[in-house]
Image (tube, rainbow, N blue to C red; front, side, top):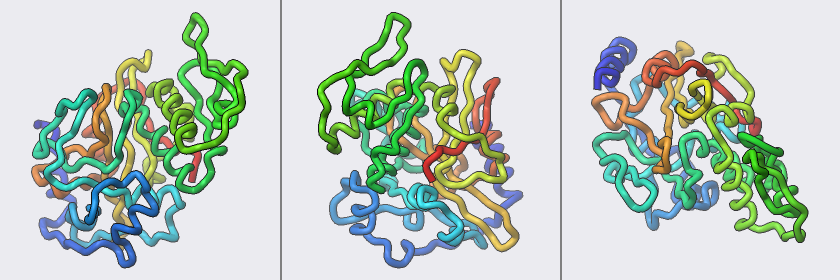
Length: 290
């Protein structure tokens, strides 16, 4: 709570108290969401940043031409409604609605859906959406690099030191099921440290939707992984962001509560750094699929 109140004070210094709500961007409706995010499951309606959050006065989305396809895709990710709790593995409830900003609409089916594994899943979903499944490349915490091509012709096994390798196996046909299995394999073999090995380091000034802020201890046994989900800009060149995260154990991907207003999740880079836990190794990173 101390950190949240501190951020509220900082936000008051930076932003006006007046907010401007807007409708979904022109041309975006539920059919658009189903086309771009085929895992979207809510019938008859859809929830967007424009509908669920307030935009600080003077701030707006950047021109889409300034974003890569991946950045644009992440920045328009669907959300859940305000009454959605953060669910955890086994059907339990990790957080009640009022303790978060919003749950991100990103269904999951594996224990690998941890905070450090979620960016791997995002990368996989985007590659599948673009029909680029064979571009999948995941550096695991220990062992050989996971590619979709190797996965289809091999059986994943581990040696006595836990290093992943592929034994020759009967060639399998490509399918959504097989691709998802290859992504899940990557998620289960991802730690905070190995996640950053899959990325390029960037500076805070380069930060954009889809980028990561990751921190961990020396052994990578504890840490955090934040995904920058959206970015707004103003005419003075200032930028504000939202981020989402999961849990050290499996739970829903969600936008944390960073102010007293659940509809105001926007932070500067400096405020994101302040909000995050303290770890020996931290940095901003970019996945290599833009």
